[in-house]
Length: 594
Ligand code: GTP
Ligand code: MG
Image (cartoon, rainbow, N blue to C red; front, side, top):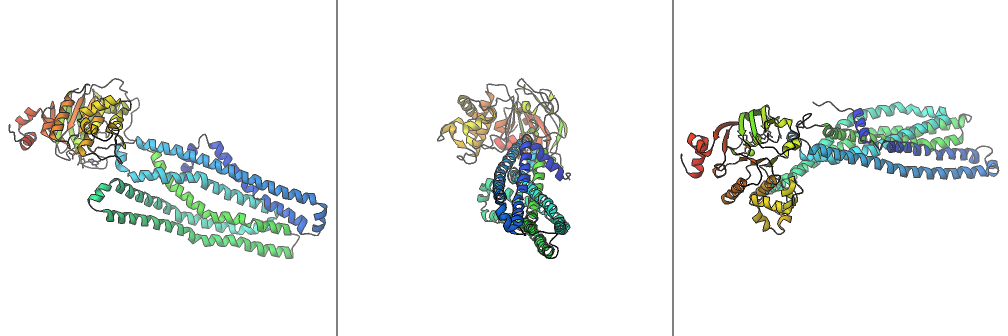
């Protein structure tokens, strides 16, 4: 269990992001205080007007003798109102500016964090959940800065200014109103306890719904292939319902406490009418009519914040749940990162790859996936790795660019552990065509030049030729400018593989790793690719995972893997002579026998 993040930490975290905007934010808070205090000017002046000109024995007399005062009071009322409205306007702008800036900063930082994470992170977090953090959760954080804090300050300043004013005017009546305070306190504490877990749950349900939508939209082909639309729609409906119901439940909690709060708010008026009325009648020396008017004109300033409390508390809890999620990513560090004083390989690596007694298991799995692997690949060599599905080939090659860390042993490049290189200098030396090809929603040119954006069109074409892709590309409507990927034209599996191969080649890697990259191309094309791989115009160690003998037979060395271990190793001829798994494979695929 991760330690719970406290509210104090959450506030401190936001405060950190407000850097450079703190003065602005502080001014905004002062503005809120100011315009709320200014709200009291109207009842203040009305009290004066009532007591001087409307009630009391000298009222009509005053109306004639002190006309100037009356006009001044009215003008002042108008002026203060104008000032207040202007402050409200500027204040809104200041909150908006500060909160948008914070939102922008956190979003950038979060994206940065997510982008730099290791494979383990991506295996752990679902895309929909990450998207929720980047959108809905962040919005709740912004809302806290722009609205919740403001509402709290507003309620607080309005209530305290009112109370001070009321106490100053007539402390007896004010004290009577204070009888309600402990009840408000109890209600709000109990409400908070009930509602806090609901917001955490609500946030989970929202992420669940987003994940379902995201997975089904991006995996829509599978859904269609199995005619599972109805099922997926009903699944989504269920989550949507779940979210709605949790939302309703959360809203209903306040409804349970609201009548009490409303009761107390109304109790204020009752106290005023009964106690104030009695005082007016029985002890007029203790309360003037003007004071009574000011009190009744100010009851709302006590009652409204009370009514708002539920809403504010709800939003605060929403922030609390969301910020915990955002902070989790903000604070996360990839386990795989540069060690202190990591070695920055300035020169191109020679491309010698060594596995020394390497064992590996996935963090979330228990069984070892690789067991005591020893391999030595010389610079410029071409090696093939073969073995049945699930034996650990992909896991093995993923240790070279340090996608994962071996649980035992060392992977070395040019005699230095891959751990010692900076990730950047290590990975820029490696060209990898992964097993499941992902192309970006970009042109073919953009996809091939992904690792080196400055690549000229001529070079892009050259690498496309190496990977036997130039023919089909030139037949496309817009050639290299054809948009592919998620919303572009469809490409066949083999076509995608060839673009991915060109992309891996285009960085002129010292080590080229092909994970089953030609599995979907025909024999003839594959032969062509093998030929061009031999003729590359830069030195390159090639590690090729393949299933076909035709791909592997010319390799300098072939490794056969079984169940996470290397069981055979040698050239094509050596392995045929050995008469093991490889020889059997040759026999099955070509009919040749040793
Ligand atoms: P093919 O690509 O099908 O030829 O298999 P492969 O030889 O490339 O196997 P791979 O290295 O992908 O997987 C080896 C073993 O590790 C299998 O038993 C997988 O189930 C397991 N495995 C692969 N990826 C993960 C992972 O992310 N987490 C866990 N826990 N296990 C994994
Ligand atoms: Mg694989």
